[in-house]
Length: 312
Image (tube, rainbow, N blue to C red; front, side, top):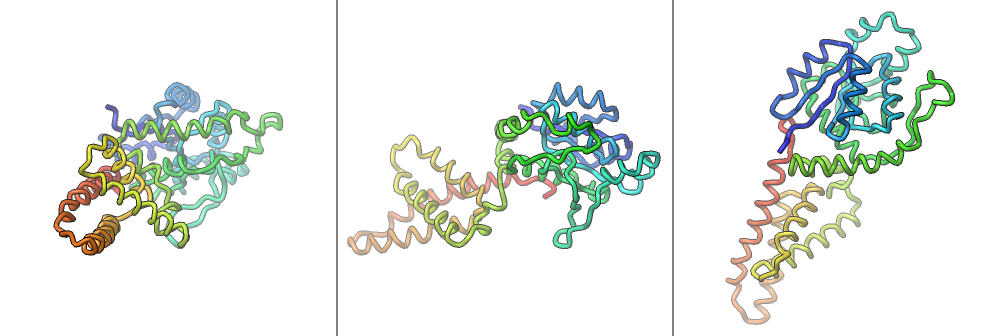
């Protein structure tokens, strides 16, 4: 099974190609590099069903390239790399208006130091990084894929340098984006196992980030699901394994910790203990359900272990 992320890169600078070769491990990424526009477009059109992400050098011609990708209804996760002074020197002969349009106004976010662009080049889920962040390019690729899968289609900021009749992308682009997102998520699940699920995680849906009422509702449902699994754990229920997988996936997507699962188990055992005491029965039977807890924790830990990017 192919288990590498397929990356296609475009940019006129040799330094970008050298850096990507250095910082993207060959055992995890399959990298194809192009400096010519025609060759790049032909490759992307031919391989877009297999590509996982584009890495594009910020350059005066990039927005025109993005326009051509839109015309072909080709939308993929994208990382845009700004090479700073090196890039500017290479583009010294380009018109100032083009440079101002593509060498984007950017600032360092005071919260996390990330590179923030003030304009959209390709689509609103693109990720921008500076040359100093190239050692962490793998993390940026994973962020770009996550954003692409999670974001909703919005209007694309078109290149005003294009003629008026062609100033907006083909309307099929908007219809193509939803299926493209779903296809990428499914492909990642099939090819990369748990790593594909990792890309679907949306921090806004993490338990700790939910509003209090929604958080409590989520916990109540998770506890109810765990209770049903416990009660049927030693039965001949053929759907039990699937229910365990579904519960673990739900916990993983919400960034639930193992400690929280243990707390849910202990609270449930306390309730069962009180009921058994009222009925005058022994509590020893509850010890057997430690197997249920171990099973759930093992599944959850394996999901975290196999999904977290190596450089995260």
